[in-house]
Image 1 (cartoon, rainbow, N blue to C red):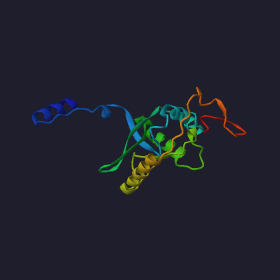
Image 2: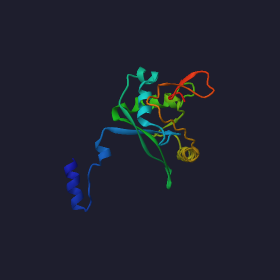
Image 3: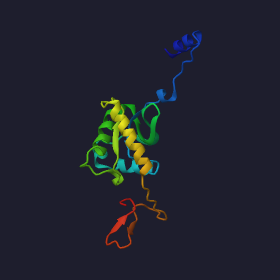
Image 4: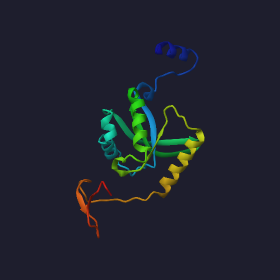
Length: 171
């Protein structure tokens, strides 16, 4: 089929090819709003994979990557995008919605994010624009706390005037 399309394209001065994103079996299923480049994506991925809801589903491969979240023409901002195998899209959308959009569920790394599912969008374009606007405001006003000098985020720490031990991950 592809050969016929390529031949037809050449006859009509068109270039037809399969883009790498179309050739892969991956889906960009959604965005994690209120995320930024200051979130360690590999640690967040590991924490999600240890979450009880993820374990209960049996797990699947997914990745987090920084990408543009667009709301309309000239409205875009970067945040974490969730990428999964195409055959696991429904389970992944369900999982990320259950973890991040339910206030009763403990969040991985205690980071409060909002999952916006892009697959089968049921919300209006206005809602998406509003989320892009909120993400822009979040990134502009984000306060950063940098902890340096610790080799392990799970090492117990005692804060100045603190009575209990905490880990870097809990902070």
